[in-house]
Image (tube, rainbow, N blue to C red; front, side):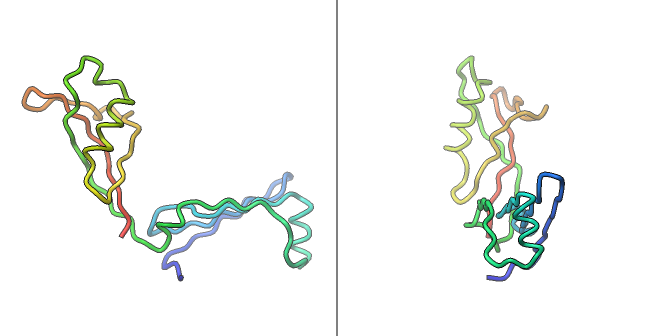
Length: 128
């Protein structure tokens, strides 16, 4: 697989090096390589197969393009409707199939009233 718009970040310090691989179209960092000072010296000295710590994530969306939209949904009439766990569960149930909602609800406009009903607003994302 080729990544259309890949980015790399290399952060060196006295503790070694951290290398991050990012897919800009999918808007995700999918690999982080951490090298100790000794491992960095070995790699820069052209020692093949140098041991290192590698963390990968979001491999299912690498190579895809991220789309996002605003999403509004009605929240329960329960007096504890600002209970974020309850709102998160409601968002997951109400979210259109194939989309993933942001579940922080920490911005000023996250909660509002419309037509006498309580609503929440968030951003939903999908990768195509």
